[in-house]
Image (cartoon, rainbow over all chains, first blue to last red; front, side, top):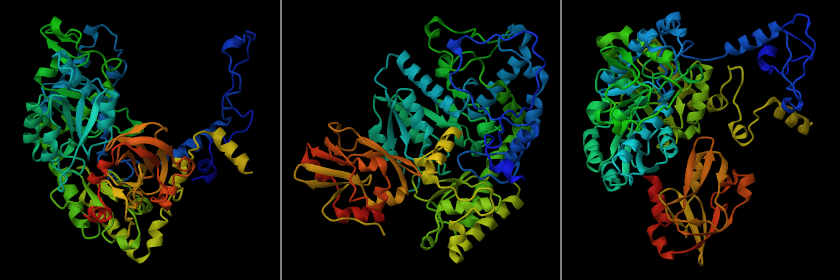
Length: 496
Length: 126
């Protein structure tokens, strides 16, 4: 790698007047923009030759780390492999050249696919129907909560303004509830890491819109009291919301719909193998039980005698204004298509192997490492589990240090300092995709790091050593973020 | 080993209140600053705001997490510790010395619902 091209910003490689294009001679004279819409200062964009631009960004891209590069045990995020066949199907011109406003009779194939995805996801999760419209998980959460609010309001039950969220919940849960205008009430966990039913009971009343839960929860533990919780919440008139972030271990084994959940969202970029994070885009379909179908957002695909339609043939006047749009058209259709490819590739029988394999892999790592790392809740986990740092705390080596040292060995670090229930949380999720060799390699490395922490703690505390950039000063970054090149220049000139 | 000081009142969410007459100095405990790690930002209320027992009065951000600050007592804010705006790390240096807000207590009977140093020490050890 050329360090100059990698280690510098594109602005620092800039030379005034350097170009990577040439325009034909101008025969038409100059027609300046009106002064009112002209910018006052120069844009000051970097000026580079084409090879510099290509090499600069190629060098950067080679330092990217993804599931295609190596093991990525990022708990709570299900960083599973994105099969190439998904990309192949999603790049078929028959799909990519469609326009969402084409006449309905010219897009029957795409609508059939969409209808089939709605049905497949409904069947996998035990829900009555599913909308594909939300663009990502958090968007799905908001949509789901809006459905819950609409349902209560439609019945004239306007007192229900509170949502119960467990203390181990994903941060998006209280955030989505707040965006939806609902007040968040926290329910505590038992020492075993499950929702405390005794703490829940006094919270329930006629002001509760619902409860948001993941199952298995953020500690990777199955909420075994879920049927009792569902009954308690339903009895007080509330609804149950299922955060689908942790659906992976349940695939083929259990369905949120059967547990009593009324609304769910799925993360297609987690459980259904579509691209994750900045490379997305994401997709957060929302499933509902029978009574909430009238509150699903538009458009939705329906199967009618005349073919597939985006208008509900059974919509009654009563519900005609109950639902509305949450996205431009049909969500990220090509992402839904990738997920559908994944579902069809595995088929009804093989999809049932996903959950058990993900669960086996997580338990195998947990058992192999629990002598070196503190396991606060020692029981069978599902797809992920949480360590509370190294077992031997006397060395002063923290979870942050272990995570940084993992980078030296070519692994992506697990999720750290989440959930907040433990001070040195380290959340590991291997997914079902990894071979035993890969997992054994990771376990061996974690043992090595634990030994290093005992023998040469400074080596771990100062990690990473083998990465292009060493330990970053995260305190300074949080206190004084430098977000633009201009700010960097100003800071440097101040120092000078 | 985290420090606990005699004579203060402690809450389960790891805030303390130091009482002098009808004035209370509210901050986070040494245990809390230790658990949070390096603190980078403290969001504080305005002077004259009312705070209520067990209700949020601000937030605190560390390199690890963002947490709400819960008031151990009810009262009216007399003063906020402005030094924390520039140097939130003061809480890591000495959490008991650097209180966050100073309030006029509205109900001193609330203090009996808080823990003393011994009870808090046992609470943290659990």
